[in-house]
Image 1: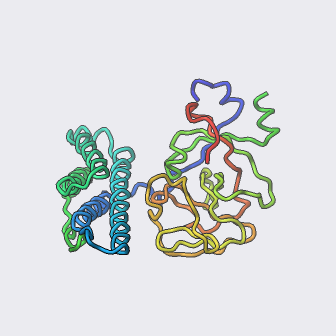
Image 2 (image 1 turned 120 degrees about the vertical axis):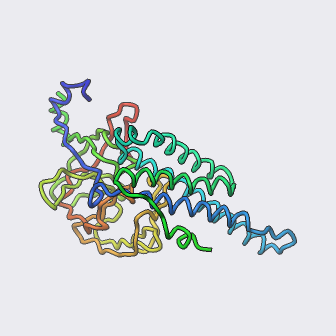
Image 3 (image 1 turned 90 degrees about the horizontal axis):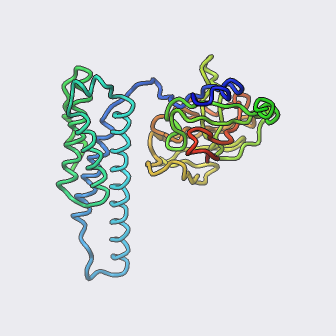
Length: 160
Length: 155
């Protein structure tokens, strides 16, 4: 709109807020971590799901339904990883963070690429890499706040 | 002439700051808003509105109307229900609809609206503020005119 100053003068522009986190400025990669772990769990469940080769019609239907649910959850949470990491990238990290942690750009880029890859494939190694990659983002995130990152309840959260 | 046209049709222009309405409206976009009258406006469900902040002299907020006067809005199992019927919300994009939602229920008064941000994970709205008195609604979003490549109706 800076290109149209005459229009701006004629019709004053008011501000409407759409950044209303309460309180503002709370960021935490834990949302991305939980989503990444969910992707991993869904991959494990998909790989463990036995196909009822000689099953009844009902068993085939149940298998299809369960398989579909696992894939849907994997898809949603891989998207969520991308969304959460994007928020950190766009809203939290500042140029000085990039200067201090030169791997930040690559780490964020690789994490979102891994999330996309996990949407496309069912690959246990890739899902594990996604969780590890989110941990790397979290390490840098907390380092910017002077905190050494750890996730001691990760295994308990993940469950059996 | 622009000013006369705007006054004739009670139009205002707003610039949006923030992303609580993402993916529908992004930070920095400009909207044309038509003022609503002083009586309870007839706002269709899912319409986008500018709401005055009753907490103080803060700027206004842009939100989406999900609950109309007299309705019951509830959140169960991470889904949004209006008068017991699940509300289809295509504007949420591909994000899980359950983001940030708990289990709760609200009665919307005869002169109130229940409004929410599309970016559920990062929006303060009627979930925390309660139904909004219609008197706080400044207008309904008519179209987006900036950036020019996104010009048109916003839904």
